[in-house]
Amino acid sequence: MTRRICSSCRTPAIEVAYKDTETRCHICRGKLIRRTDDKPKVIKKRLKIFDKDVTPIVKHYRLKGHLKIVNGKQDPDKVTKDILKIINL
Ligand SMILES: [Zn+2]
Image 1: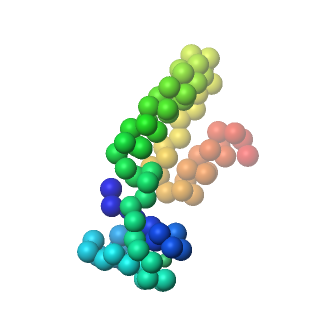
Image 2: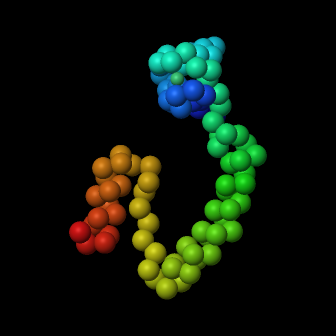
């Protein structure tokens, strides 16, 4: 979890372009900061909310036989293709 963004222009500091020791944005020289949504406390809260809000919906549709699963780890174009196939577009 080393994703950082520029505190000034909000450009992500992509890992392949930045060394871990770099502290300044390549574009505007602004200070690089860690994204607040990458902090463990924020991630735990997000997962808790997901479990509370989304899990019951998944269970409901699974019981009704209407749940379709798409592998979101695939190439984005393949994910789109699989979704469109499911909804018959
Ligand atoms: Zn910047």
